[in-house]
Image (cartoon, rainbow, N blue to C red):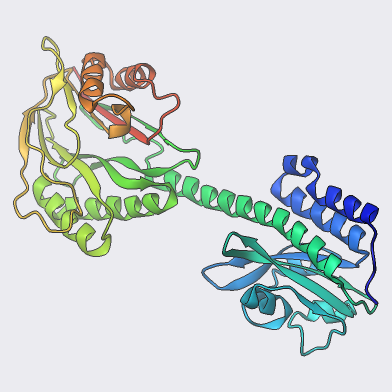
Length: 401
């Protein structure tokens, strides 16, 4: 029989699941607390949350009370199959007064002796996040009030599910960042190297990158680039672009040739991902730099006895503009002993409300023919990037005096 509740009981239920203190709990603690409260409020024996694995189109047991074995076993059920899968497929509540083996796929539910089940979808707007269900060991007819309460709990669980998914994406992004941005720049004869990377968003990574690598010829490769966008998607594209450029650098003695091949790769395999990149090769005696730029801002060159300025060479179109650029160009720069070449991404010099030339002039005035680490520290301290609105990457190379 359905349980009838009065207004006082309704108010108690509402307060229990909208309690502001829940918002201060960690995601896993929030889910556990919600399940504890819904078991108490509905007088049920089990409660569980299954979150959607979007790529597998499966529901994964994530939190449970009375069904902890389900979580430990990592139980999964395909959308459309079984009790929880049916809720996910229809995105509507489902109640079973008399559970039979034909109704459920999870053997743990049957082993527990669950007689009645009620489940609702966990939604975020129009997107399915997962399923929340409760069960009773005694026969129970769940009423409309029970459904409304469970849907309210599902709303709170949906918030936790989105936070959890976001944290997992962030953890993946940070792991990707650690693998793609050199943790330590190589010790290289004849030059000093220093670099910085600051994410422009709380997510922790984006499409900006830098790279330094030795080549079999004795030349030193130096790259700085920027894939459009932010977050994990841009970081993944950046990783593929970075790896491809390293491969082309091994078969090309000319930066323009390497960027031409990279442009074909980006246009074909990374359509829609606009990318800028500067690839420079520093000669074995460190006196010359052969450089080519695909839409990237020109680096700052500072040498003893001369005013700093933007390096003079032509800039070709970015990578991935939709048509391959047939004639990219390389230029040769001299690098005097003690001289510094500073590459950077646009987040360092762009500011809201001012033209980029202002930021470029400001940067040029900051760069001195000093140790590479000091140059990076000065640029980052004085360029106002404590709270950037875009990713910032900086790479400095100095020829040893």
